[in-house]
Length: 407
Image (cartoon, rainbow, N blue to C red):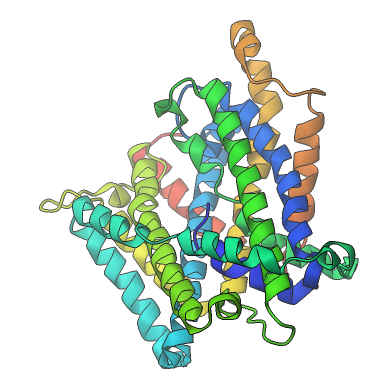
């Protein structure tokens, strides 16, 4: 959950809404908990892995199940593109050439093609790259919070500027990127011990931690960075204010390693989704091909690598974040809508052992309303891109079903 967002979102949100931004992270975190509780209820009806794909498929059949899986796939492509752009933004703070159009294109192309090749030739090298990138991650952020706490004054809590309510929606759509990813725990719930009890608790604790963490770093940011010195894309200004030039280099390197690790993990995991869908006859067999020498799903890896390169080169960080958030929210909507159908189909024993919510469907109804309201804040271009890619996926789905003669 904490990849590029922690290094970019606080400064972007502060630049948009000012000193109220720390409280927005808490508010959105509270709203997301209703979605998490609903997912906890959903997960308690299954011992299998699969998450939103499993829920949508169980309630509505293979077409909706595939569509949900494909939308999640799109969200990962958009997230990869967004995080690639975030990495170049940070590199540009210590290497100005990266800020040029040529430099940005070369760096993004190197990232996408390099990680694609590492995964193409074997999982072992992918895991080595992931381990290397994740050695340095959140420690510098904790350090900035601890050092910056002394700058917080009561006025920050009392004099927070109220944002224009009409322009708040797009900012919240951007801000929710901090919290998406909790559903990843449900992808492998079938491999965990007693997921019906442990999974809801783990997801709720994760969201609470994320909300508090973003609240603190945003609070330190608005307290420590002098007005006019803000960098609306990075935490570099905060590092400079607290630690001088050492802070600039430290936060930049931490961001590069953290975002690099996030990209490496996505390149490792996401191609396995199309590979799995192919094995289930929901995508053409081409996606399920295994390389004879490297024993990797080479076609799925190449396909994902190509799409991420196109996305990363053609979109800005903010646009890609919004695209990733929108598609993820659509999968949440499908999952929430599946809940009553799953409950009705369950036997009495499963119902009695499931994770119950106070008020019956009240919390899921709130969660659905939250998702619908936030998705409505997305602009037309993002919707067009999402629907275009979903249509492309559905074409592949029908080709696969026809070829396998499964209807």
